[in-house]
Length: 207
Image (cartoon, rainbow, N blue to C red):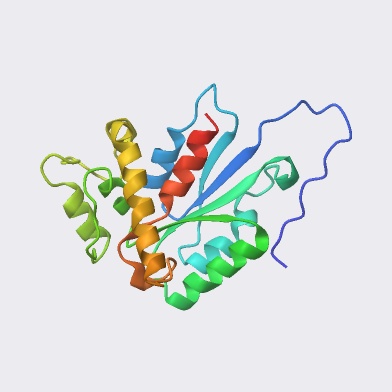
């Protein structure tokens, strides 16, 4: 229950379509603005960021397909759903349930602890000490020489693009360290961490 039946395809007459990547985002501003910038005419996929009405990780993932509504979703043609969410007030039980549902449904997850801003922060600094919350991450991000004028509704993609490779390496290194320590990535204990780098690499590979 809750799964929307995939739209029945017409047997003929439908032009070849690009695979669609649906990004189900917890945030309605920061993530949406950022990922829209990955769109280009040369892109081999259609990137569709959609804000979710659900703030808890388990509900966001559980209702992911319902969130895209009646938009075409054909996994066998390359369509994919990425669920993008932060730690926020999620308990470890909620995060674990979100992970289990994603595995079952074939979705991907881009998780940040404590917030999406950790991904931005890694463009400037190899952050490995815990960050209390989103506000603390923003404070670090607004330090001199970083995104000093940062606000959640501001466009930052172009400023960050030249530093993206460094951010990816830092993010992957942090994930590897946590795994070596046997720390669950999708947990409150993984602070700071972000797996947004995996999504960014995926989107870049389709350009």
